[in-house]
Length: 232
Ligand SMILES: Nc1nc2c(ncn2[C@@H]2O[C@H](COP(=O)(O)OP(=O)(O)O)[C@@H](O)[C@H]2O)c(=O)[nH]1
Ligand SMILES: [Mg+2]
Image 1: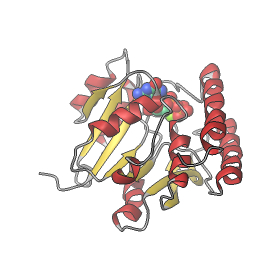
Image 2: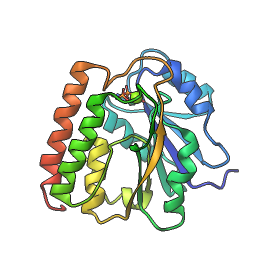
Image 3: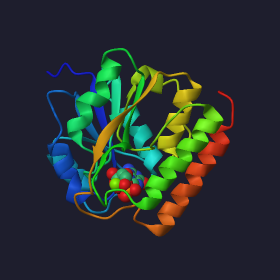
């Protein structure tokens, strides 16, 4: 039986081409489980993930909704939740460095920054890099906390996560977690991570014009609605 207290959570929508590889590459000796949250894939992502060894759960549509369902499905014995994407962009080799500060008791929330780390050429669009800087600046002004990215690869102490009243069920989820972590005075640490081009399949967000526009509006809405409000 695995004695780890880490649950890895992967939101995945139509990632058949990459999800098997991502789940296969999990460092199983370091984690208790890998949860793939599928919300409406039509390409058999769930079956591929299950046969690669993931626990598959389903959720209503939306990136945040998947992330939330993953947290709810995590083993009760897990004390750290790790999020990453299902397209193979995040480097699982960075997992030990992402969870170490939480295990050592020096942080409650660790964000992997692609901007501070190494992003493979082509893995991030210019607009994403610009947005990361702009949002980082806005959050710094309204919250006084310095983030350089809104990347998907992150770890959070479960008890701290449970304190955060998360409401964003689509692409505002990642930034909401960052802002609420600051409002709730979590100990936050950003560490450089590597980032690669997706293994296969197509982008649902940055590579899709209408989805990126929706995501941008959502993210700005989070800065205004949550960032400018006081801690509830
Ligand atoms: N479960 C779920 N996952 C999603 C949804 N939209 C995107 N994803 C997943 O979220 C991750 C990021 O999406 P991706 O298309 O790679 O966006 P990009 O990195 O901006 O190109 C991938 O693992 C997607 O499969 C959604 O509505 N539900
Ligand atoms: Mg991606």
